[in-house]
Image 1 (tube, rainbow, N blue to C red):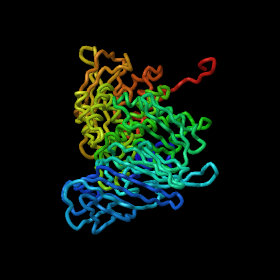
Image 2 (image 1 turned 135 degrees about the vertical axis):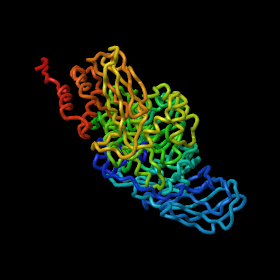
Image 3 (image 1 turned 180 degrees about the horizontal axis):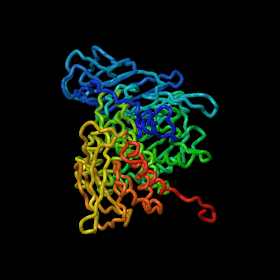
Image 4 (image 1 turned 180 degrees about the vertical axis):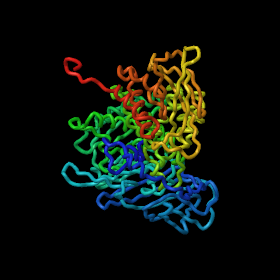
Length: 638
């Protein structure tokens, strides 16, 4: 929902509201991943290079007409051209090269979502223009080019025209090669009534008035995927500012509500320079618009240069919006703007790698908001909302790996879920901690510069981070992305022979919510960190658990002192301590020397262990008692 369609997770359910971020556990339990379906991607015989697209929407008849001239490269001789089209009527088609060719047959397949133009003889390799005239409905499906109903200042019901193309719905608006790896540049023009605003990815280059209509022509886009193309036509006000690095930022709101865009404007103008500094790459476009849409199926969508939002995910009413909603809006803005680099500048090769787009942005949004608004204590919210939610869902028998092979477009929507978002963000957070912020930033810069305006696989990111950190990132992360579930690390301790330290025995098994024995063999490479009561904020041991069982020596620990695995609740695993080790936490819980995130993680792990039958209720009750606080009055404790 960047956050694209995505944002099925926090952003995509039809009854979504920003105060209700997640699906219920029951919904996740009943959700089924689809069976693999035979699916063929578009033939590799023809590649698009540039689209010259003209759209004329009619908001009274709720239809549109369009023309597109696609500069293509025929790579191999072929007697047909196949591209994507759905719910469109194609009025004419010609292929222009050395001579003008008209297809002998045009076949539209609703099942395959394609248009096939057959020619009487093979087309030789080379450059051509495929010129198409087409028309379609401004639909009510909230995908493709659709209508968004709103009430104008006169109290009348009217419509805006809005695009939502991720993942495979650009084909509903214009015939195109609608796959993320088939990038091209775009020249877009919109002809609209002159009293309406028309927006697209790029700034307006020129406008021409024709009677009651204006034709807006926009500047040429960078090379980009079709799912990031966008257009909005309607009645809007806006507020604007420039970021410190000179990018024009506008927030478009319903008429009469532009003051409600001021908070998002403040956030966006701070976020852009933050990401520029973090990635060491400037925002690639001259402007960015954030626009509130009345009818929107996602929470937000990261169209390059024109980010669309559900109204409740962008607008702040100073009189009525809660602090929690403002924090959520800051996160959504941070998420979508992160995608301008990670997803838009560098894009996954295919939807199998979608988790990386969404998981990464879902992590870095918190990194950004924590930097800009430290008073939000945002990492505690991350653990409480995203991390714990991911653990709960991923311990179910019907979970799935983060990285899911995707074929048919019908499967793509199925992976926009809490596993893509929350577990994805959690394992990226674990990776960030494992290699350290400095090497993480170096690796991100390397990845983005090496692959800018191109497409990548998950392994390309691991390679860049491995190069920057000199750690086995690929080996570690593949155990977290390619298998479902996560481990429980069981800990037992014994004093070292010299009395100067403690030897821990660590063992890992797959954790299941119901305590059942997992089917299959699971093994993770687990980044393990350890802290002690001497300095709860300092990690005294950092290692990787690569085997089912291993021993770790923790130096300089007295028998009475506690030892904490996974300080900060960063590793994506649960921890099970012996009763003796648990008891040592009680004083630290009572006097709050055990940090808040550690208290939260410890308690959540304990409850999960009890539910799974791994720990007795008595152990939980002992710790719960330590969390008791004495009631106080203004004069002190009662």
